[in-house]
Length: 279
Image (tube, rainbow, N blue to C red; front, side, top):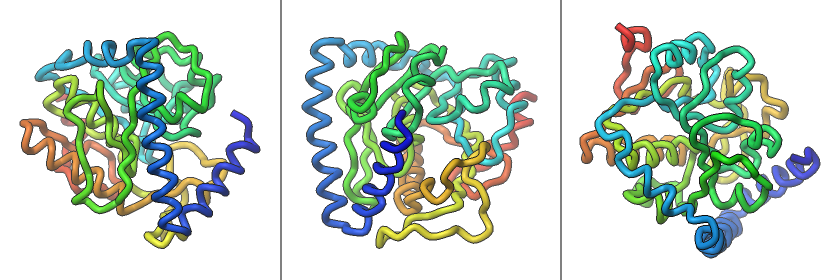
């Protein structure tokens, strides 16, 4: 991915955030065009049918959803590998690959700069999920790639959050790629979902007025060093609400979500000790 393109894109997005009505308009344009775009490529490639084949494929099983927080450890991922535990991961998780033989079962990206094309094309994992917006911006040739329509939620309020029962039609997106992973995992039938590396702490946080501010003494947002820390920020309200919306859906559909993260600040889900999982 061209670095200048990324920098320009970040600056544009940062400016748009300062004008709420313009930000909402941009989201609507991306969302509505994305639906048209997905229908066009789906007609040609049959992504809906490929996604439909995943329905309840893992009914009753357990999985981990991996976050890229500072607490994530290669040795913990190795434990998942040794015990053949299914896992979801996203964005720049590949930065840990040099330190582990573990690879995620499922990999997902919704942010247009979540991963470079080169890294995405050479990644060897069983399933890769790309939102339509990312797909439209990049040239992905990976044979494991699947595309879904990402229905972008416009408002960050919890009352507006929706959860997809059918990922062949749409996956709702807001706050974090983890929200998409929750929807995929539950569509596949997983009944116990454990979180790891989901610190929910970011060095920079975007306020509701669109201004990005430093978040106390938090130095780094990920297990790797961010190239441009100020450009890696959390829309805190939306992120917290995506977790709460996922918990609400899980609680009413017989799914348990538990947080096995070592530390961090995510207290929406009940805590479990990662080491006890293997006992």
